Length: 474
Image (tube, rainbow, N blue to C red):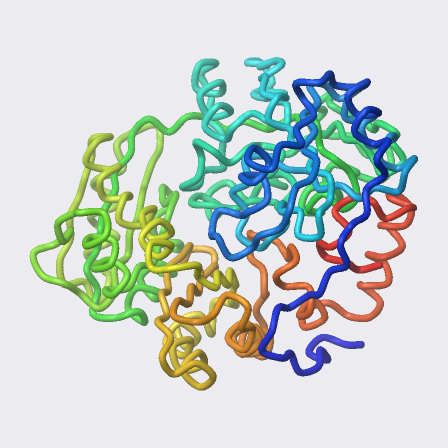
């Protein structure tokens, strides 16, 4: 198989999963490890662990086990392996591709009890956090030590650092600091054998063999259950200015973001929104229109640093073509209000119904063209669908959200992913493959790459019990 060789995908659920059969002896075995209160089997309680944030992916969670330490996680994995029980690691359950949902009735290993920041090293600019700490918790711990954390995203209050690592989360400031993998200096994780690997020393330069932390980051829980992570921190940027630019259209917004990357060193975020999406956010969240008149597209930009970047931002924006209006905020509350229009997109779109959330990326030279093309690509297979485009335009990441299509109808997914692959893009920029994108993994990976994935999976999880329906390269 070569990239682009995936066959036709029918208009039905992307993957048919055989239900997991659980040994009756597993529940008492797990109780021995974590105690009765932390093994949950009541369907009314476990139901919340069996559906993702979008509502599109639903499964069943016959057992939810909540270990409180790495040792307990390791023993849970061993007990599951003993009886051949598949498991799904789960953090804040904020994923978008079904990667943390027990779609086939797997055991859910909830890591929310691992919610401590173990250590902050102010001299090194690093911290060690357990997997269940929220992204906001990491940000707060970094700030308390006089540092900042380079990753930020709208779900910061509920998304956990373990989930961020598992999916290699990106977010708002990738163009400035890089994705989660760029922040990870070491991990502690439990492999599919129950063995623990731990390398949390935080050395900046350490070439002693394979970088397992980089491999586990983005593996979506298929190679190991991440229980702790050593993170690189960044200097704080206390001086911050945010500008919302009303643009003639998407092409001007994309070109503007690309120009600002070249001309504004203090640029830390560049976000694309379209007029339809901003109107939806305003209506659903009860917000006023952000500018005096509606515009075809909006470019939300942030500049930050140790000194005030307002003048540099104003000068750089003045040279852009297609800017029709602007709102500028230099104080935290007004800046957050402008960001609310961008971060409110997911909530507003979900209010319409379960969306098809197609998180993709494009090379810079075709980005503007593909933003314009996406509605036509969708309309060709689903004429009545609504398409909502927004995303991290500064790094080429576009969120293609489609509503008005049955959650199990994958013709839209197929059309979008094929168009993305043909343009040289990626079918997953930051959300992962999960279960949702399994049939299309070959669009961007060669036969040799998939074989290497499978070999690594067999080496670290020989019985295939770790999140077996995610990626599914074996």
